[in-house]
Length: 111
Length: 115
Image (tube, rainbow over all chains, first blue to last red):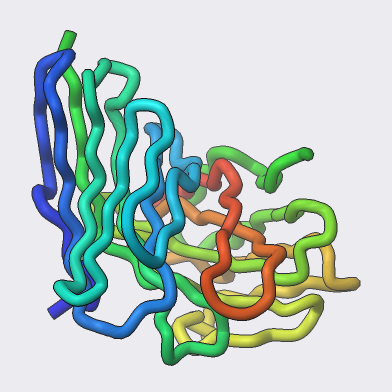
């Protein structure tokens, strides 16, 4: 079993829909990251959070430390949101400052 | 602030050939990471440098992969000889913050195809 699990693996939505991507982890963490990867490979950090909720534009990330679960929400989705969204965690037991990654969620937003 | 730079962006080689990738991290970032990302999977750490020293290379296939970070700035990752299963995107990232709860900044990646 992977330490970081994401669902769904693939998601297709119509423009304007509200989207939720889920991430569950099985280890102690110091922080959880949501990353966006567009075709071509480059990765952009969207959020880093250790508790509560963060919002940036149409993106909202929440985390529940007790349940070891995080969600990434996209409101009023747009075709330009189409990308792979990756959840990653910084382990609380690690001293090397490494990330453990989920396998990603491929999001396609249709016009 | 300039981002993490990588080159080349794309590379196609035949199996058993050699290839090298280059990474220039964000200025002042002490920590540098090389990842391998196979299609449909999350990135896998190959090697982590702190300045010019290796912190973790436990997942680096040392019989064919090597990496160096001379002078604690730029880094190169080499594969010699390449195998078909090395086809992947190779990502470089750097990080400025010490301790827990840090953020990594990723480069655009190098897409390697081994035929």
